[in-house]
Image 1 (cartoon, rainbow, N blue to C red):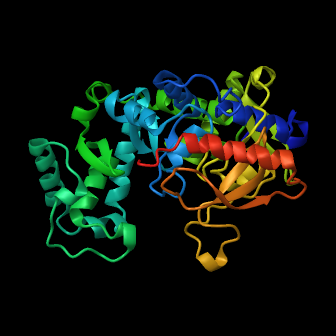
Image 2: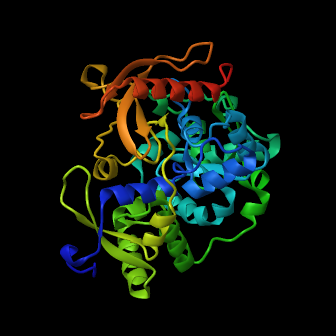
Length: 399
């Protein structure tokens, strides 16, 4: 990649990169601003997407992510955008996510890539079974004739394979296949279980739009990713949406450099690692000057918050080593099953092991670990109690 020697590039300290990232991800905005569906939609669009996850200790991750940015957020707000207004749709970026429907045409490229990938996947083929075409046709026909269906609506005599979540019957695998490849969409959820329907019925306006041409798609994927990362490597740009591969991202970086749209920089690290070559929008200095100061508060983040999703990036920008341990055997966990990082202004200062959710909806800490050099002062402890109180207000105990 033609970027020159790292030592000759302009340096971006980790603190500056951190500020750009937090601003791009909506964590420097006033969280006490009025909340509305329009405010929530603009915030999600600015973030890019919101990862959705089924694990529920305090609350599901997507609600925790949004509550950290907007005090007035309540879970029904996201449901309204997803399932009533259809401003968002559910599909995949790096993982399952709620994504602005305005970008649906770009996902047509993913649908075709998934179709090719699943055809070559032994894992998928084992779950679809030897009669995969017939099973998919049957599922497709029933939904077309009978309307939205859940997996439980399809009975089978096929023996399910062992494997917990992945012990799918062929009809469940067919539903997921048709969703991954764009024929089905998530019409709504019942107790977080997917209800599938034809995409043309769920998102009629979006499905009428063609896929953008390849060049426009690549330009969109890379530009929007960098905007939401602030400063990033080519690998991080490719991984943000997971719509393009690394080679494509590298080519785009070279072309955007030659056009003067981005600049190569020497990104310094908070954790003491060697600086690395990265990329930033050409106006990154102006964006940094315009970024507001962080709110004067502590916040607890979801373990899937964009700030901590990429472990290596989080170490580099924050000097914070965060690992999601829900799938780590209990005996090998350092902190806990569902630990929440603690954000203080623009620093990650600790982590919290929440107590299991109670009927009263109050979020309680079972244990707190402060980072080395961070003192558990009375003011900091009080700020953490305030953060948990705000989070409790966002949770529906009956949800």
